[in-house]
Amino acid sequence: MKVNKKLIVGNWKMNKTPFEAGILALEIAAKAKSINNKKCEIVICPSFVCLDRVSKAIKNSNVLLGAQDVFYEKSGAFTGEVSADMLKDLGVRYVIAGHSERREYFGEDDEEVNWKALEAAEAGITPIVCVGESSEEREEGREFEVIRRQVLEGLRGLNRGSFVIAYEPVWAIGTGVVATAKQAEDVCKFIKGIVGKDVRVLYGGSMNGANAGELLNMPSIDGGLIGGASLKNDEFIKICQS
Ligand code: PGA
Image 1 (cartoon, helix red, strand yellow):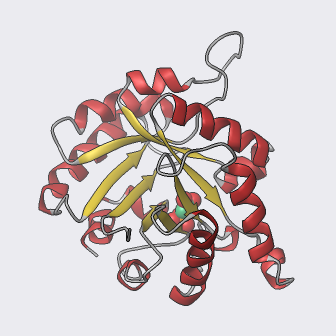
Image 2 (cartoon, helix red, strand yellow):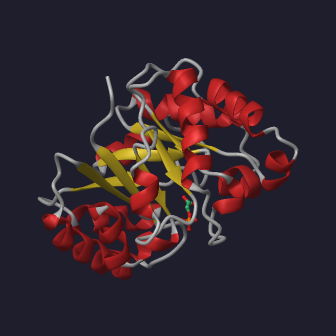
């Protein structure tokens, strides 16, 4: 089965206070009315403390709620952590697992990413498992090897259909250096070769209103994970319109 509906996910990272997030979510929800929800599913991922506010702001719209991270234990003495059940209770439908910033600054490895993805899926939240090579790994020609490992280890034990993958080359995140459509397509196609054609594979890394059309037109790219450009309502909606 070919994936027809595009999935556009905004990752707001550590930006916006709850008050500001509520306003941005209302703006996006209003503008998203113009988007055909049979063709495009829209998700926004604010920080944990903004989830409740954003959830209320997007109620009755065609925008869904996502979170940026989740902990892999169900409950207990894990100060500062947030469980999948807590997210579920707030209406969270998707959660990002293993973003390269979590891997780089918080030491997450494939095993931890896998635990998080399994925990989310068990709670009925779709994990968006992020994979991507660094610039050194690409220069050494090791991108496919790295991605194969991240995919196989990060998705271990997950049922097909219960997860989404985001290919985000580390060198393209927040740098303004977007992968060419061919580079992105080649890796997304490679990932589908491992996990199956019907699994949704997103591209992320400096996607914006100007380059989204070409990337989203590629046959193996089923959507986008958007950082910087998801913080501006016009730009984000432009990507959804692409
Ligand atoms: P960017 O971030 O769009 O700002 O490059 C993408 C991401 O980190 O998911």
